[in-house]
Image (tube, rainbow, N blue to C red):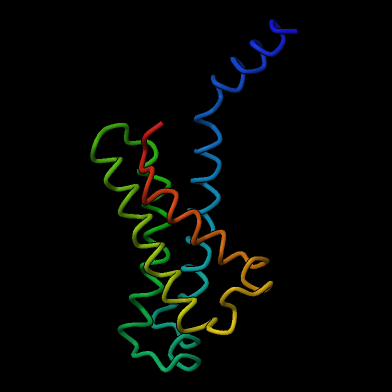
Length: 136
């Protein structure tokens, strides 16, 4: 039995990096899609619904798109620069998600809606990469 447990543990230790990569791709692609859906610039939906200026609405769309791209690409840079870029992408994601909750979803705080939305998982993903960066 110990031998089986050792083999299972060894197997998952060898593929542990894939779990982080899958999570990175999931969060990154979600942000790319969210940002891409706001094109062409300036995003009229953000301007009309949230009364944002065209410049700020464009900044939000570009931030979503670029943070997703940055999160994915930085995962392949295995040095301190890649670690910094992963944390930067995580920071941008956290700032954006906190603002989204504060502006667009004020009624969600500590409710079932918050914990069943995709937004909470995007926030958690941002926090994860802000703290973890590229480290194992």
